[in-house]
Length: 341
Image 1 (cartoon, one colour):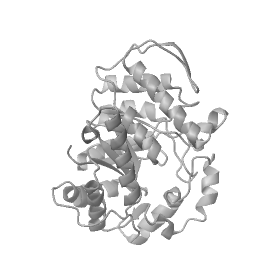
Image 2: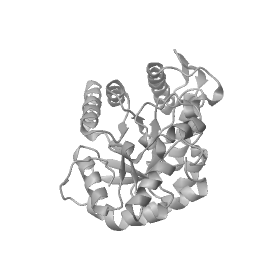
Image 3: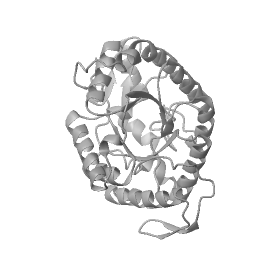
Image 4: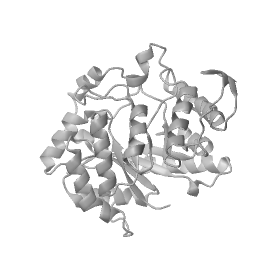
C-alpha cells in the first residue's frame, strides 16, 4: 500500500462552507484523503461549531475527488445502527469506492443529548461491536431482525445499496478493541500515542485479523495526529492552548458532558501538557521527521489536524514544504515524538 497523508476536517472549529473550502485546497496542495469528525458539540465553546457531518459529506463528494470518511460515528442513542447503515450506504452509492465508515464507542459530550443512560466503557465497546454485526448484515442486503443486548431491529432492509459496501474501521486505543477491529472490520484507525502503545495496537489488530482468516498486511492502518503549526513557535503554542486545549488533557474524556466543562478544565492546561500528544512547531523539518517516523511504524495513511484557525496557511505550508518530503522514499530519520518546539 502506498503512503498517503490525509487532511482532518475539524467540524468542531469551522462551519460547513469553510470546511468545504479547506478540503478543496487540501486536495489542490497534495493531501490524498479526508476525514471529518462527527460531533454534536464542540469540545469547548471557543471552538464554536458543530455542523451535521452527514449532510456535509454529501456536498464534500461533489467538491473533491479524494476518498473520505467519518472519524468517528458512534452507534447508540444518537445513531441507531440502521440509521448509520442507511446514511453510509447512501454516501457510498453516490461516490463509489470513496467512502469509509469510521465507528467509535462515543463520548458523553455528543451522545448524552438524548437523555438516556450513559454506559460504562466496557458496555460502550460491547454496544459498538453489536452494531458492527447489524451494519454488516444490512450492507449485504439482508432483511434484518435482531434482538440483542443493546439494539432491536425489526424487518429492516436497505433498498439503496452501493455495489460494494463501504469499508468499516473502528477508532481504537486499547488491546481488546484493536484485536476485535482486526477480526470484525476492514481497517484500523488510532490517535497518535507513544511508540510502545502504537506497536501494541498494531500487533493486536494483526492478531485479530489472522484469527478471522484475513491478511493484516492487506488491511489499511490509519492514524490521526494533531499538530499546531503557525509561522512562529509562540503562535503555534498559543493556538494549541486557545483553540485545542483538549489536546493537552492527558486523561479519559469520554464521560465529560458539556463544552463548558471542558472549558473549565482547559484553564489548567499548560504548554508542557501537549508533550507527546500534539506536535507544536513552526519548522518544516520537524513536521517531516514526525510524519516519516510514524509511517516507518507501519501506517499507510496519516490524517493531520492543525489546531489553529489559519488552515489556509497551514495547507499551503504542508503542500510546499512537508508533503513533498514525507511522501518520497527516503527513510525516516527520527522517532515520532510529538514535541513542543
